[in-house]
Length: 217
Image (cartoon, rainbow, N blue to C red; front, side, top):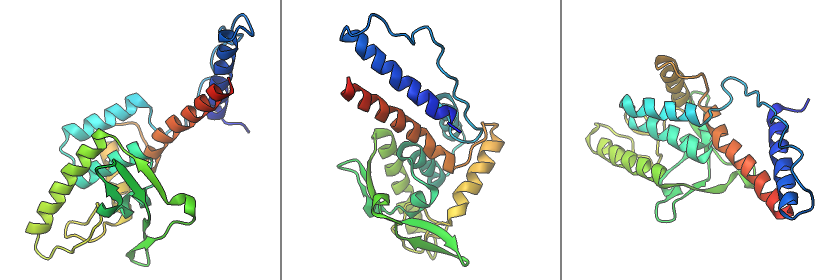
């Protein structure tokens, strides 16, 4: 069965092709201009649109969310990372000068402990550029973490971005559990933490089709 999302993307692609044909005077008008675009039936909890995302970030701003949870949301949204990849990030993976994050590992919980896993394949090791908004959040979080490491008794040193209260790698399920409670408490549209990554994925997918079509025309 063809998904409604795929149909919508194909509709966008065909529209661009017809508009290109009109521009090059191959046809007189776009035959799809009077055709209603197919509606995208998004599954609940699959991903947020722009307005839903704004509501989420506004709620985070207004409710003094703990630094590690706040930055985890920003990373998931703006970089499209899986929760295990977010939890596996270390400060050495971030190049603030080049505005670049390198994904090298994933953090999972198994056999009663946090385990670091290497990527399943080479394509999972990748570089992702980030913008000024995420840079600000990362620097804020680093300042908070540096302060905690100097004042919390028995702090366990780690290079991980996200840590437990006493230091050391954070349990991967902690972010998802906090996020589910936060969404419910503030009456936001239901979505899983994993679903946040699909916002940027959808933008990339549409952008890919637009770019490839523009090249064809």
